[in-house]
Amino acid sequence: MDRLAQQFAFLNEADRLKSVLRATTLCDGSRQENSGEHSWHLALYAMVLADQAAPGVDIARVVRMLILHDLVEIDTGDVPIHSANGTAHASEAQMAAEAAAADRIFGLLPPDQAQDFRALWEEFEAAETPDAIFAKSLDRVQPVMQNIACGGGTWATYNVTAEQLQSRVGHKVARGAPALWDWVRTRAASFFETI
Image 1 (cartoon, rainbow, N blue to C red):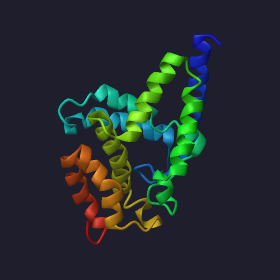
Image 2 (tube, rainbow, N blue to C red):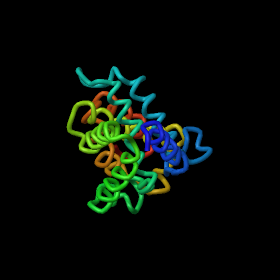
Image 3 (cartoon, rainbow, N blue to C red):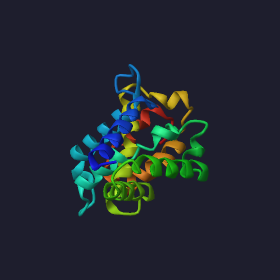
């Protein structure tokens, strides 16, 4: 297969991310967000909130990670962090399924791009570099802001407690953007007895 054919095969496959529904609704609460919309919105979050990143964070790399980070959901679907399966979110089985999906999806690309994209995806998943830590913070804060915007959103659906929000979301946001989490936490507090 020639290079362009491989690239368009990947792009056509990536279009399927628009069909993966997430638990989170749009800010107006009118419908569920899809994973393609989520990825686009996160790229915009990175651009707008770049001043919240630690010194030296490369926002262009963060944007690239955020555009790629959920492509594996084409095969695995979205596992909401607060759902009954939320504990499966970081389980070995889920991580293995996502790795297999990454092999398949990134494997559609020419080898040089496949290697580059897969490395960015792995860096995001590991969340050990400053770029990935900030990207992961944005990935966690965006659904919180959408829940706040639509009156609590899925927090009631999944019986989310303040402790769950802090342990599953807050710590990751604060790790990469502490001032951002302080600001968001005060706005989320009204939806919980304590936060």
